[in-house]
Image: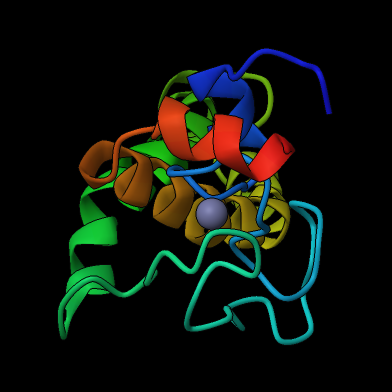
Length: 130
Ligand SMILES: [Zn+2]
């Protein structure tokens, strides 16, 4: 628990942006397929409300979409420009990649989004340690 708060680690480990300890999702980990979007209403540690306002998570599209583009772009380039592979192998790989990227896109996208709006509360984190 003595680890210093790190914003990027908090984003990648899907933790609450305010206290850095509560889990954002009911199920831990990035590669979760069943009930992948289940989130508690409040942070189990600091009671921060996760869905700050109605429709808050729609904004997470702004952070999820670039993740997919980053993952799929090389396959698209391969499909368009590879002379030896032809288009179907890269396009098939694109679907396989999407299968793995899907939970990353949604969960990490939400994590980045909420970390963008809620700041770390050092005083609160100090109180929680006591
Ligand atoms: Zn919290």
